[in-house]
Image (cartoon, rainbow, N blue to C red; front, top):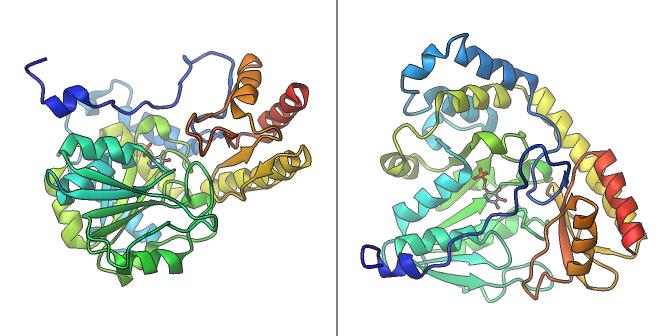
Amino acid sequence: MRFLRSDIASMAGYVPGFQPPDGESFIKLNSNENPYPPSPAVVAAILAELGSDGATLRKYPSASSEKLRRIAGDLYGFDPSWVIMANGSDEVLNNLIRACAGEGEEIAYVHPSYSYYVTLAQVQGARVRTFGLTGAYRVADFPERYDGKIFFLTTPNAPFGFAFSTDYIEELANRCAGLLVADEAYVDFADENALELVRKCENVVVTRTLSKSYSLAGMRLGLAIARPEIIAALDKIRDHYNLDRLAQAACGAALLDQEYFRDCIRKVRETREWFSTQLRGLGWHVIPSQGNFVFAVTPDGNGRRVYEGLAQRKILVRHFTDPLLSSGLRITIGTREEMEATLTALKEIG
Ligand SMILES: *Cc1c(COP(=O)(O)O)cnc(C)c1O
């Protein structure tokens, strides 16, 4: 098509996980969503923002999401000038590439992790270098000095679920000439996080999302913590009204209800440990997880067969055809009842 950039016309595009139509009775364990609803304070805040006639929607939202930067800054121990809010963490990942990597310049990530970085880089005409993992879950062949513009480190890793230690992330950051972006989409379910490195190392950025740990995938809310100079650059690039009014109301209420949040996290972590033990009892190899999902290799090493058996029983999990991953499944941690039903199905499938 002659109207298109040739690289855009030929690029594959990202394929998100399958989302069945609302109302279908699947047990949905394929997108790492939270099985619990968001805090009741979130619903109340959205309704209050909407009012009885929706009149507030006539007016543009706060362009800077200033109040949310204060709330998030207080929560994580940073001045608001170190915080930017995003329309899903995907938006801020995109804008980091736009801010740092020009056409023909390089970014890197670890495979397997979040392959959306590749699509975002391709749109910018940036090149992508891929690092593998060692058996001990370190980055394979990472140079003493990595000269690319950004190194994206998904930690905890998806789909495997292990987390890199803060010491190791610091070591990697010190070997990067460009930014190290710690994509902490799952960190609220983990034991450690890399926030202290944002203060300690000039080149570390942390991204977070409210999609998983705050049960708000449907609202599209994320954020980044970084040095004010980086935040200022990201502010120039983003859509100026990137968070709508309802999203801003929801975000503030969610971040402020830490008691509800902690209770949800505790339940997911408890269910994760229980489910991992049960799966091991069925002969699966389960990678110890720091996320709200587990990656586990089936006893016969045929992930596809078990995926199909579960799908027939209306249980959706994630199977990847990549040879590194095809022997296993990535299973989101749902409620205890959902995981019991999943185990019953797995025993039937054998
Ligand atoms: C879910 C996820 C994201 C995207 O988060 P959104 O805030 O929903 O855009 C980014 N990175 C990783 C590793 C994720 O799993």
